[in-house]
Length: 315
Ligand code: NAP
Image (tube, rainbow, N blue to C red; front, side, top):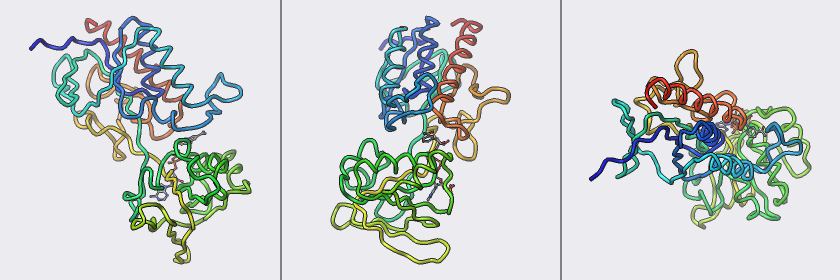
Protein backbone atom coordinates (compact mmCIF):
# COMPACT_ATOMS: atom_id res chain seq x y z
CA UNK A 1 0.00 0.00 0.00
CA UNK A 2 1.43 3.39 -0.96
CA UNK A 3 2.05 6.02 1.70
CA UNK A 4 -0.40 8.93 1.87
CA UNK A 5 0.92 12.29 0.60
CA UNK A 6 2.57 14.62 3.10
CA UNK A 7 0.47 17.76 3.48
CA UNK A 8 2.09 21.15 4.15
CA UNK A 9 -0.54 22.10 6.68
CA UNK A 10 -3.60 20.31 7.96
CA UNK A 11 -6.20 22.43 9.75
CA UNK A 12 -8.61 20.59 12.03
CA UNK A 13 -11.93 22.40 12.43
CA UNK A 14 -14.12 24.69 10.34
CA UNK A 15 -15.16 27.38 12.79
CA UNK A 16 -13.92 30.96 12.65
CA UNK A 17 -10.41 29.97 13.77
CA UNK A 18 -9.97 27.09 11.31
CA UNK A 19 -11.43 28.96 8.34
CA UNK A 20 -9.30 32.05 8.99
CA UNK A 21 -6.21 29.82 9.21
CA UNK A 22 -7.29 28.30 5.88
CA UNK A 23 -7.65 31.72 4.23
CA UNK A 24 -4.16 32.75 5.36
CA UNK A 25 -2.35 29.48 4.58
CA UNK A 26 -4.23 29.22 1.27
CA UNK A 27 -3.18 32.73 0.33
CA UNK A 28 0.40 31.75 1.21
CA UNK A 29 0.16 28.99 -1.45
CA UNK A 30 0.41 26.20 1.12
CA UNK A 31 -2.54 24.28 -0.37
CA UNK A 32 -4.10 23.61 3.07
CA UNK A 33 -6.24 20.59 3.84
CA UNK A 34 -9.08 21.29 6.27
CA UNK A 35 -10.69 18.42 8.18
CA UNK A 36 -14.36 18.92 8.94
CA UNK A 37 -15.99 17.42 12.02
CA UNK A 38 -19.64 16.87 12.91
CA UNK A 39 -20.60 20.58 13.06
CA UNK A 40 -19.24 22.26 9.89
CA UNK A 41 -18.87 25.99 10.51
CA UNK A 42 -18.59 25.57 14.27
CA UNK A 43 -20.62 27.29 16.97
CA UNK A 44 -21.36 30.39 14.85
CA UNK A 45 -23.69 28.30 12.71
CA UNK A 46 -25.89 27.71 15.75
CA UNK A 47 -26.15 31.37 16.64
CA UNK A 48 -28.59 33.77 15.04
CA UNK A 49 -27.45 37.32 14.44
CA UNK A 50 -23.80 38.22 15.11
CA UNK A 51 -23.84 41.90 16.05
CA UNK A 52 -20.24 42.41 17.10
CA UNK A 53 -18.14 41.08 14.20
CA UNK A 54 -16.37 44.19 12.85
CA UNK A 55 -17.34 45.27 9.36
CA UNK A 56 -21.04 44.41 9.60
CA UNK A 57 -22.74 47.58 10.78
CA UNK A 58 -26.17 45.96 10.99
CA UNK A 59 -25.01 42.52 12.10
CA UNK A 60 -24.59 39.35 10.07
CA UNK A 61 -26.19 35.92 10.19
CA UNK A 62 -23.76 33.48 11.89
CA UNK A 63 -24.24 30.72 9.33
CA UNK A 64 -23.77 33.18 6.45
CA UNK A 65 -20.57 34.53 8.00
CA UNK A 66 -18.97 31.07 8.08
CA UNK A 67 -20.22 30.33 4.55
CA UNK A 68 -18.48 33.52 3.37
CA UNK A 69 -15.26 32.51 5.12
CA UNK A 70 -15.44 29.04 3.59
CA UNK A 71 -15.92 30.45 0.09
CA UNK A 72 -12.99 32.82 0.69
CA UNK A 73 -10.78 29.91 1.83
CA UNK A 74 -11.83 27.83 -1.17
CA UNK A 75 -10.91 30.70 -3.50
CA UNK A 76 -7.34 30.43 -2.24
CA UNK A 77 -7.06 26.69 -2.86
CA UNK A 78 -8.23 25.19 0.43
CA UNK A 79 -9.43 21.57 0.25
CA UNK A 80 -12.12 20.35 2.67
CA UNK A 81 -12.58 16.72 3.74
CA UNK A 82 -14.83 15.12 6.33
CA UNK A 83 -12.71 13.28 8.90
CA UNK A 84 -12.66 12.93 12.68
CA UNK A 85 -9.20 12.82 14.20
CA UNK A 86 -9.31 10.11 16.86
CA UNK A 87 -5.62 10.06 17.86
CA UNK A 88 -2.31 11.65 16.93
CA UNK A 89 1.33 10.63 16.77
CA UNK A 90 3.55 13.69 17.11
CA UNK A 91 6.69 11.75 18.06
CA UNK A 92 8.19 12.00 14.55
CA UNK A 93 7.93 14.12 11.41
CA UNK A 94 5.79 14.31 9.39
CA UNK A 95 3.14 14.46 12.11
CA UNK A 96 0.53 11.70 11.99
CA UNK A 97 -3.20 12.34 12.36
CA UNK A 98 -5.16 9.15 12.83
CA UNK A 99 -8.77 9.24 11.62
CA UNK A 100 -10.12 5.74 12.27
CA UNK A 101 -8.48 3.54 9.60
CA UNK A 102 -6.95 6.48 7.77
CA UNK A 103 -3.63 8.18 8.54
CA UNK A 104 -3.00 11.75 7.37
CA UNK A 105 0.61 13.01 7.27
CA UNK A 106 1.34 16.67 7.82
CA UNK A 107 4.42 18.86 8.11
CA UNK A 108 2.46 21.30 10.25
CA UNK A 109 -0.90 21.12 12.00
CA UNK A 110 -3.35 23.78 13.19
CA UNK A 111 -5.90 22.50 15.69
CA UNK A 112 -9.07 24.60 15.83
CA UNK A 113 -11.55 22.10 17.19
CA UNK A 114 -13.58 24.54 19.28
CA UNK A 115 -15.69 23.60 22.26
CA UNK A 116 -18.91 21.65 22.78
CA UNK A 117 -21.91 22.65 24.88
CA UNK A 118 -21.79 21.61 28.53
CA UNK A 119 -24.79 19.75 29.95
CA UNK A 120 -26.03 19.83 33.54
CA UNK A 121 -26.07 16.06 34.15
CA UNK A 122 -29.44 16.17 35.98
CA UNK A 123 -31.83 13.18 35.75
CA UNK A 124 -33.89 13.15 32.56
CA UNK A 125 -31.57 15.46 30.62
CA UNK A 126 -29.70 12.76 28.72
CA UNK A 127 -32.83 10.69 28.09
CA UNK A 128 -34.72 13.64 26.56
CA UNK A 129 -31.80 15.28 24.76
CA UNK A 130 -32.19 16.02 21.05
CA UNK A 131 -35.66 15.95 19.52
CA UNK A 132 -37.39 15.17 22.82
CA UNK A 133 -37.28 18.61 24.36
CA UNK A 134 -33.77 19.15 25.74
CA UNK A 135 -31.43 20.98 23.40
CA UNK A 136 -28.47 23.37 23.32
CA UNK A 137 -29.46 25.33 20.22
CA UNK A 138 -32.35 27.79 20.11
CA UNK A 139 -31.58 28.72 16.51
CA UNK A 140 -31.91 25.07 15.50
CA UNK A 141 -34.91 24.07 17.60
CA UNK A 142 -36.68 27.24 18.78
CA UNK A 143 -39.36 27.14 16.08
CA UNK A 144 -40.64 23.80 17.46
CA UNK A 145 -41.86 25.60 20.59
CA UNK A 146 -44.35 28.02 19.09
CA UNK A 147 -46.83 29.24 21.73
CA UNK A 148 -45.29 26.93 24.37
CA UNK A 149 -43.44 27.70 27.59
CA UNK A 150 -39.72 26.94 27.60
CA UNK A 151 -36.79 27.28 29.99
CA UNK A 152 -33.24 28.44 29.32
CA UNK A 153 -30.54 27.37 31.78
CA UNK A 154 -27.54 29.62 32.45
CA UNK A 155 -26.66 33.23 33.08
CA UNK A 156 -24.07 34.13 30.44
CA UNK A 157 -24.35 35.81 27.04
CA UNK A 158 -25.39 32.53 25.45
CA UNK A 159 -28.29 32.07 27.87
CA UNK A 160 -29.46 35.67 27.39
CA UNK A 161 -29.15 35.36 23.62
CA UNK A 162 -31.02 32.03 23.53
CA UNK A 163 -33.78 33.42 25.76
CA UNK A 164 -34.21 36.52 23.59
CA UNK A 165 -34.28 34.45 20.40
CA UNK A 166 -36.89 32.11 21.87
CA UNK A 167 -39.27 35.00 22.59
CA UNK A 168 -40.00 34.97 18.84
CA UNK A 169 -41.77 31.62 19.23
CA UNK A 170 -42.47 30.70 22.84
CA UNK A 171 -45.36 32.11 24.86
CA UNK A 172 -43.05 32.46 27.87
CA UNK A 173 -39.35 31.92 28.53
CA UNK A 174 -38.05 31.12 32.03
CA UNK A 175 -34.39 32.07 32.41
CA UNK A 176 -33.07 29.88 35.22
CA UNK A 177 -29.85 31.11 36.80
CA UNK A 178 -28.06 29.88 39.91
CA UNK A 179 -27.25 33.40 41.15
CA UNK A 180 -29.14 36.71 41.34
CA UNK A 181 -27.17 38.58 38.68
CA UNK A 182 -26.43 37.58 35.12
CA UNK A 183 -22.86 37.00 33.96
CA UNK A 184 -23.92 38.22 30.49
CA UNK A 185 -22.71 41.58 29.14
CA UNK A 186 -24.79 44.54 30.33
CA UNK A 187 -26.51 45.11 27.00
CA UNK A 188 -27.63 41.47 26.73
CA UNK A 189 -28.56 41.25 30.42
CA UNK A 190 -30.68 44.43 30.18
CA UNK A 191 -32.44 43.18 27.07
CA UNK A 192 -33.23 39.82 28.66
CA UNK A 193 -34.35 41.04 32.08
CA UNK A 194 -36.58 43.75 30.61
CA UNK A 195 -38.27 41.54 28.01
CA UNK A 196 -41.97 41.04 28.73
CA UNK A 197 -41.90 37.36 27.72
CA UNK A 198 -38.86 36.46 29.82
CA UNK A 199 -39.35 35.56 33.48
CA UNK A 200 -36.17 35.41 35.55
CA UNK A 201 -35.87 32.45 37.93
CA UNK A 202 -33.05 33.69 40.15
CA UNK A 203 -30.93 31.72 42.63
CA UNK A 204 -32.18 28.47 41.17
CA UNK A 205 -30.62 25.29 39.87
CA UNK A 206 -32.27 22.66 37.70
CA UNK A 207 -32.91 19.41 39.58
CA UNK A 208 -34.74 17.10 37.18
CA UNK A 209 -36.20 17.07 33.68
CA UNK A 210 -39.69 15.59 33.86
CA UNK A 211 -41.29 13.53 31.11
CA UNK A 212 -38.91 10.58 30.67
CA UNK A 213 -41.78 8.06 30.77
CA UNK A 214 -43.76 10.03 28.17
CA UNK A 215 -40.66 10.40 25.95
CA UNK A 216 -40.94 14.21 25.83
CA UNK A 217 -40.17 17.05 28.24
CA UNK A 218 -43.10 17.73 30.54
CA UNK A 219 -41.71 20.18 33.06
CA UNK A 220 -38.48 21.16 34.79
CA UNK A 221 -38.01 20.76 38.52
CA UNK A 222 -35.89 23.57 39.95
CA UNK A 223 -34.60 24.30 43.43
CA UNK A 224 -34.06 27.70 44.99
CA UNK A 225 -30.54 27.55 46.44
CA UNK A 226 -31.31 30.16 49.11
CA UNK A 227 -34.60 28.75 50.45
CA UNK A 228 -34.23 25.11 49.40
CA UNK A 229 -37.78 25.25 47.95
CA UNK A 230 -38.46 23.09 44.89
CA UNK A 231 -40.97 23.92 42.17
CA UNK A 232 -41.88 22.72 38.69
CA UNK A 233 -41.78 25.00 35.66
CA UNK A 234 -44.49 23.88 33.16
CA UNK A 235 -42.17 23.82 30.14
CA UNK A 236 -42.07 21.69 27.00
CA UNK A 237 -38.59 22.71 25.94
CA UNK A 238 -35.33 23.16 27.85
CA UNK A 239 -32.39 25.03 26.32
CA UNK A 240 -29.12 24.38 28.14
CA UNK A 241 -26.65 27.28 27.87
CA UNK A 242 -24.18 26.80 30.72
CA UNK A 243 -20.90 27.07 28.88
CA UNK A 244 -18.69 24.73 26.91
CA UNK A 245 -16.11 21.95 27.15
CA UNK A 246 -13.03 22.28 24.89
CA UNK A 247 -12.62 19.58 22.23
CA UNK A 248 -9.03 18.67 23.04
CA UNK A 249 -9.42 14.96 23.93
CA UNK A 250 -7.60 13.21 21.04
CA UNK A 251 -4.63 15.59 21.29
CA UNK A 252 -3.90 15.69 25.00
CA UNK A 253 -1.48 14.16 25.67
CA UNK A 254 0.85 14.77 23.87
CA UNK A 255 -0.25 18.44 23.85
CA UNK A 256 -0.33 20.30 27.16
CA UNK A 257 -3.73 21.33 28.52
CA UNK A 258 -4.72 23.31 31.61
CA UNK A 259 -6.93 22.14 34.48
CA UNK A 260 -10.06 23.00 32.44
CA UNK A 261 -8.88 20.86 29.51
CA UNK A 262 -8.05 23.86 27.28
CA UNK A 263 -4.84 23.74 25.24
CA UNK A 264 -2.01 25.53 27.01
CA UNK A 265 0.19 27.36 24.49
CA UNK A 266 3.90 27.92 25.15
CA UNK A 267 4.86 31.00 27.16
CA UNK A 268 5.07 34.07 24.94
CA UNK A 269 2.73 32.67 22.27
CA UNK A 270 -1.03 32.32 22.01
CA UNK A 271 -0.89 29.53 19.46
CA UNK A 272 2.38 27.56 19.66
CA UNK A 273 2.03 24.20 21.43
CA UNK A 274 4.72 22.12 23.13
CA UNK A 275 5.19 20.23 19.81
CA UNK A 276 7.10 22.17 17.10
CA UNK A 277 5.01 22.89 14.02
CA UNK A 278 1.73 22.19 15.84
CA UNK A 279 -0.50 25.17 16.62
CA UNK A 280 -3.86 25.74 18.30
CA UNK A 281 -6.45 28.46 17.72
CA UNK A 282 -9.90 29.49 18.86
CA UNK A 283 -12.19 28.20 21.61
CA UNK A 284 -10.24 24.96 22.16
CA UNK A 285 -7.48 27.05 23.75
CA UNK A 286 -9.28 30.23 24.82
CA UNK A 287 -11.42 30.27 27.94
CA UNK A 288 -11.18 34.03 28.39
CA UNK A 289 -12.47 35.83 25.31
CA UNK A 290 -14.24 33.12 23.25
CA UNK A 291 -15.44 35.53 20.58
CA UNK A 292 -15.75 34.95 16.84
CA UNK A 293 -13.30 37.77 16.20
CA UNK A 294 -10.69 36.52 18.70
CA UNK A 295 -10.96 33.00 17.27
CA UNK A 296 -10.38 34.46 13.80
CA UNK A 297 -7.39 36.41 15.15
CA UNK A 298 -5.87 33.28 16.64
CA UNK A 299 -6.44 31.41 13.36
CA UNK A 300 -4.50 34.16 11.61
CA UNK A 301 -1.64 33.97 14.16
CA UNK A 302 -1.43 30.17 13.88
CA UNK A 303 -1.37 30.38 10.06
CA UNK A 304 1.41 32.97 10.00
CA UNK A 305 3.46 30.99 12.54
CA UNK A 306 2.94 27.75 10.59
CA UNK A 307 3.99 29.49 7.37
CA UNK A 308 7.20 30.78 9.00
CA UNK A 309 7.92 27.40 10.58
CA UNK A 310 7.53 25.66 7.21
CA UNK A 311 9.81 28.21 5.55
CA UNK A 312 12.51 27.50 8.17
CA UNK A 313 12.05 23.72 8.22
CA UNK A 314 11.80 22.90 4.52
CA UNK A 315 8.08 23.38 3.85
P1 NAP B 1 -20.32 31.51 30.21
O1 NAP B 1 -20.07 32.95 30.03
O2 NAP B 1 -19.25 30.63 30.76
O3 NAP B 1 -21.62 31.36 31.12
C1 NAP B 1 -22.05 30.13 31.59
C2 NAP B 1 -23.24 30.37 32.52
O4 NAP B 1 -23.76 29.11 32.94
C3 NAP B 1 -22.84 31.14 33.78
O5 NAP B 1 -23.83 32.09 34.08
C4 NAP B 1 -22.77 30.05 34.85
O6 NAP B 1 -23.15 30.51 36.11
C5 NAP B 1 -23.78 29.04 34.36
N1 NAP B 1 -23.42 27.67 34.74
C6 NAP B 1 -22.25 27.02 34.52
N2 NAP B 1 -22.32 25.75 34.96
C7 NAP B 1 -23.57 25.59 35.47
C8 NAP B 1 -24.25 24.50 36.06
N3 NAP B 1 -23.67 23.30 36.21
N4 NAP B 1 -25.53 24.68 36.46
C9 NAP B 1 -26.13 25.89 36.30
N5 NAP B 1 -25.54 26.96 35.73
C10 NAP B 1 -24.27 26.82 35.32
O7 NAP B 1 -20.74 30.79 28.84
P2 NAP B 1 -21.53 31.38 27.56
O8 NAP B 1 -22.72 32.14 27.96
O9 NAP B 1 -21.68 30.21 26.66
O10 NAP B 1 -20.52 32.41 26.90
C11 NAP B 1 -19.22 31.97 26.49
C12 NAP B 1 -18.47 33.13 25.86
O11 NAP B 1 -19.06 33.46 24.62
C13 NAP B 1 -18.47 34.39 26.72
O12 NAP B 1 -17.22 35.02 26.61
C14 NAP B 1 -19.55 35.23 26.09
O13 NAP B 1 -19.34 36.63 26.27
C15 NAP B 1 -19.43 34.82 24.63
N6 NAP B 1 -20.70 35.02 23.92
C16 NAP B 1 -20.94 36.26 23.38
C17 NAP B 1 -22.14 36.51 22.73
C18 NAP B 1 -22.38 37.87 22.17
O14 NAP B 1 -21.56 38.74 22.31
N7 NAP B 1 -23.50 38.09 21.53
C19 NAP B 1 -23.10 35.49 22.63
C20 NAP B 1 -22.83 34.26 23.19
C21 NAP B 1 -21.62 34.03 23.85
P3 NAP B 1 -22.24 31.57 36.92
O15 NAP B 1 -22.49 32.92 36.28
O16 NAP B 1 -22.75 31.47 38.32
O17 NAP B 1 -20.82 31.10 36.78
